[in-house]
Amino acid sequence: MEDKSILFSVIIPTYNRVELLMEAINSVSSQEKGDVELIIVDDGSTDETKTEIQQLKLSFLKYIFQDNQGQSAARNQGVEKAKGEYVIFMDDDDYWLEGFLDNFRSAIQNSTKAQKIFRTGFIRVYKDGKERKAPNYDAKIDGHPVKWAAYNMCGLWSLCIPREYLMEHQSPVGFPHWQDTHLILRLLAQYPFEQLDVYNYGYRIHERMGSLRSENKKDLLNRAKINVKAMDHLFENYGNLVSIYLPSGTSAYLKAEKYLGYANLELTNGSRSNHWELLKCSLRTRVDFRFWKGYLIFFRNVLFR
Image 1 (cartoon, one colour):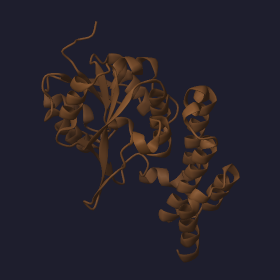
Image 2 (cartoon, helix red, strand yellow; image 1 turned 60 degrees about the vertical axis):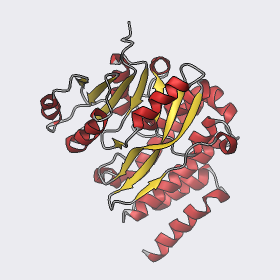
Image 3 (cartoon, rainbow, N blue to C red; image 1 turned 45 degrees about the horizontal axis):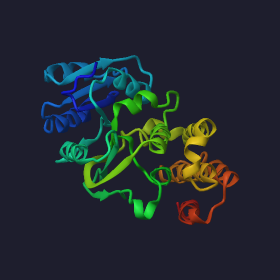
């Protein structure tokens, strides 16, 4: 039976980023008002994560260790152990801004529909200190939220999700990339959604984040193919659920865009091993005039670097 005193279960999967994790935990602790449980799912860390967490002695914190299975498995483990009415995921290298939980508390209290998915806006925080707000969903402009989330970065960590929805729709295990969007599109296709007109989440852009870690720069072609594999899995298995809200050709568009993005990322990183193959994969999947900026950046980098 659920503990009705717990409104939010905050789940942070983590792996070998103890310094950043401590900052994430502090930002949660500063907004805890007795209605929060914080679940840290350690996905096989070999650093001082366990020791540092045990020294915190926070009564609302639960620590779970599992062998390294990936972020999706860690999230699913956290949901299974959660007792809150709503689940909020958080990345271990990010942090909450002031008012993050209070805005969700107010939205839940004022909602005319029970069990709605809520979303806050997020701010990209760059290592040079610059900040940039990411676009928020606007129902009058963007149409159905599934369409918006397919073509924009929604971020699973920006959502406040009724736990019962996540018991039915789990994070897809086996896909280390694009797993967030895979889950988000399934959720938004089935359940009520509300965008809050606030920006309360700090999304760090840094060299140790999952998409930019130096050890991943050597094989961006393989990473792109893993992304595409997750996209194929969604549309092959849940196409009837999500495609009714999407323009025709969305699957091909997203895959071509992903290949092109990785082609440009490889050139930006200074590598030239697979950039042509990545471009060919993009062009074979779909040629689209909306990619003109990406094409321009690619050929400019080829010619002038």
